[in-house]
Amino acid sequence: MARKEPREIAKLDELRAEGTRKAMDVLRSCTFDAGFLATPQGGENYRRVWGRDSVIMGVAAMGTGDEGLLAATRRTLETLAEHQGPHGEIPSNVDPWSGRISYGGTAGRVDADLWFVIGCGEYWRRTRDEKFLHDHLSALERVRQLLGAWEFNNRGLLYVPLTGDWADEYLQHGYVFYDQLLNLQAQRCYAAFHRHLYGVRDQDLEARIHELRETLRANYWLPRGRERPPEHVYHPVLWEKGEKAAGRCAGSQWMPFFSPTGYGYRFDAFANVLVSLLDVADDHQRAAVDHTIDGIVNEKLPLLPAFHPVIRPVDEDWEDLQMTFSYAFKNKPYEYHNGGLWPLITGFYVADLARRGLVDRAERFVGALHRANSLEMEGEPWSFPEYVHGKKLVAEGNRHQGWSAAVALLAEQAMAGETIFEVSGDGV
Image (cartoon, rainbow, N blue to C red):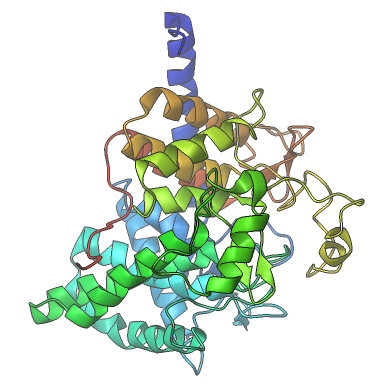
């Protein structure tokens, strides 16, 4: 890699410092009595406490040392727990003004429950707040029971309906890898709670966690030319068909999902980042994914897209994609989940690169992250956009998006050597 000039280094340092200050301002502007709002701006239903967005903001906030942001993190988790549904479901979002509670749109949001557990786990790990843990044990146990029911067949993997997670207007369904990874981390949190509360390890739970990790490794990484299914294969015939049809995807990326009808093959960037950050991938797989990312990102602004390749009107999935939306169709080519570039995912990728000690590579992407957050919207710089258009490289979606600010802070924390997630407790 070419050596950076001192002027280039100074310019990047200045951008990172300003980006960090601006991100703190945005996070503070999202702080309300009920916790973190996804954005302080109006528009659709973003100005609410979310089981996904707000918890991710809390994970970043806990690393800032800011007492006000730490208190907002706790209030976020309390608000979500207070509005838990009758079966244990955590709200997708809560409107603190009207009192309206949503558990999802046309389908429930599986990842809201998972991020809630992870958020509670990280809050307790960092604060050792015993009262908080005891106050939330009932809510956490109800989520745990619900997650078990969502396996449907008691075989370890959650079944996620179409529109059932953050990609709520995209064509992912079945055993979605992103959600399985979050479930692995949530189960690790439960194991940590048990060890602390009872002073012993839950051997059955940790064995299940170990089994889940091996199941993920076996079923979502399709190698090239393997003669027989691996030991932890979920369904041998499905795996064999998937392996034969994988083509160039085999051995270069983790598969986004499989369902009773087969595997999906588009690159799910969030899942391919989390699988490394949560210590499921090995170094060979990490290097292969890095290479795949290099072939996808735009060199002018290297941000990770939500999914790749883009679904176009000539593609067979286009008709189904056009029918999958809540308010208005957002997924035109290179927009939103359909090839839009996301600061959110890029921030987690920086955290993963920093954790692996790939400092130069991390600096490349953290620079792009801050540049994306600095883009102008409605005549104002530092818009902290929801996403960036994959071709035009302009800011789009909602502005002052809290998690776009949060991941800038999270990325910088990781580059300073801080641990983002506790990943121990997989059992033996």
